[in-house]
Image (spheres, rainbow, N blue to C red):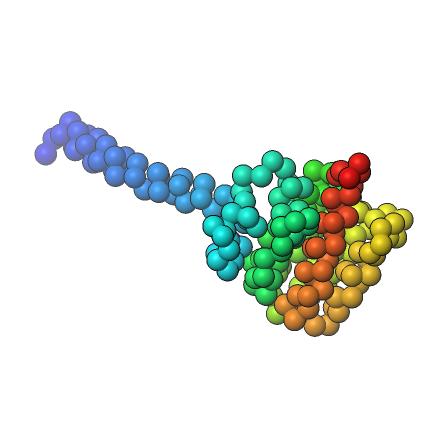
Length: 195
């Protein structure tokens, strides 16, 4: 084969390769976009069937605060039951971070710490080191929401401090659930002081 024929052959194979890569790149792009969807997708998989499932994990909410309030069952909507699942608690930590950011309560570092705690929980839910990281984040969140140490009838710091650092977090899910519910009620008062 001549050198010109060799060049044509390589160009032809190059075009075939590029055409074959288009569906692969599209599939990778779709997977990356899908992975970046709402944090509630992971939690939704563990949720028990309720109505149509949209009540507790509605991804079309108007704000991160409203998303957290719905998640934690503040007000009329009850908190769903799958609190034993690490993904569910991790989703709560992420939503709490988003709501605190939207209300400009606490520092940016606090939001990052809560999201990091969620990742720790997903990676090693049985570790007491994970419990310590989550506990520390919840205590900081409580301080951001109640800087005077509990101006409401419930002391969020006390609830966060009731989490024992030497026990796995999933064994203490009732305390985490109480924190989510009570912090949502406190947040509701902060976000709507007239109510």
